Length: 130
Image 1 (tube, helix red, strand yellow):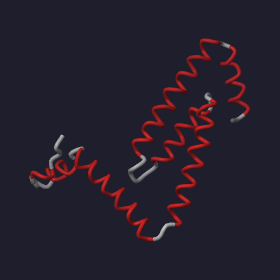
Image 2 (cartoon, one colour):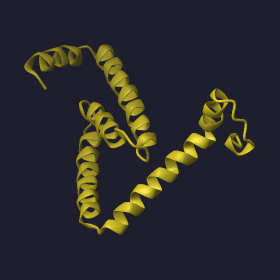
Image 3 (spheres, helix red, strand yellow):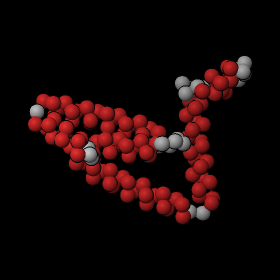
């Protein structure tokens, strides 16, 4: 944290109600970012980065989030090291599982039927069962 932010935070801490409001806002924002990241983990993109960002936001105010962030980061680094050390068949399996999750999600959300509609393709299996 910068010195300017620390001074501002110290002033907020002096006022009990303002401090509580600030901690609530940090808690809500951090939790929302964390939840979005958790939902995005199986998909290509910044899922884990968003999880770490959510924990980092929470860690500015909550000790439990700071220690959880360290714990999750260690487990993530261990898993990625393990995954990189695996043979090509295991890594291809990971890619195939991720691809299946993405395709299933797009189908369930009706994306295939929507895109098919753009091209006047009305195949029943494109429609989501939901």
